[in-house]
Image 1 (cartoon, rainbow, N blue to C red):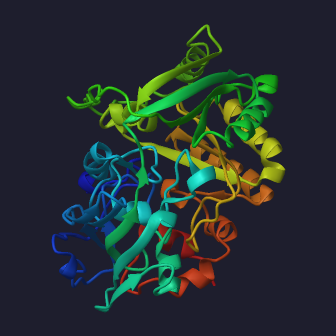
Image 2 (cartoon, rainbow, N blue to C red; image 1 turned 30 degrees about the horizontal axis):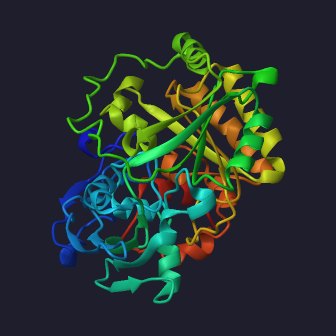
Length: 439
């Protein structure tokens, strides 16, 4: 039977571990197991990189201790099961913020390192791994390695973005960034096509730390790529107002019989959102919670995709091919009547990622969800892969559940070098899938 307690966020494929153990002591986090092990944080990876079907999952949320925090320097030492949300609760009142954050705060520190997550400020701050001063890596042979860019630097590079395959990360020291308060100065502008998005993004990078765009994935022709562009900076201290989510977010109550995102709802939802305001631009003040984590405002929102779940697709294509490739991707998605209500465009900067297998690289990234409709969905995603591969781009493993091994090895040419650092006692459903045909 599928293990719903240890599923991925996309709820595809089914999770069927042979055994599950819980780590509460980082010194004894690696269990003696008859099958390969894999750390399982909070299950926010979308595909099968956090699954270990037939193997042993090691729950790491029990490694949830803060070890030290220096409020004068913003350096935090904590265990790997600590959630980003827990860091924010500690740090924001003391004038500090995450240096990089993905679109959900319910990610563990270990997961953020394993996937070398990125955020709206990639063009300024790069990936999460750039702000990890040191990490503790425990191997299944009993070794414990302390890794940084100076100490065991090769292991550090393999572990950051290494999908949890080099061993269990049990502790990390991270540098936070100073802020004056919890509010954001947000400038929102409507744009009518992909060219305008690219111009807005280029202009905003110089004086805005955070940039991102929502795009209408149903638009075609001259309107392809249209959407809303959001640029923001942390705002100077204001009179303290209550956190808008202090009382907790509502939950999606049940898994719907069929996906609520479908051919009948997709175009009306996207069109309505594009025309949601008569003004084409405005500026306002927002609390960091709804700005960075809009989907965290509804717990269990993934239930809206029905019992078969969904597949998220995030790719990046180089700047030289970005306009043509993103246009073709969006045209194919619109023609298929597929996609999601929340489709995101972002320009990655030139800040190099520290990991051998890190996903972000200079270019334009597109991310969106696809309800799992079976064969038509998989055929569409294979076709999108063809566009990305031809452009010399890549697809994000943390959000993948079906890319071919050949595609993976093209996207990540350092895979063979990385393989030398994979712990023989560690594996994942994702790794076995993409390595099945490797020579």
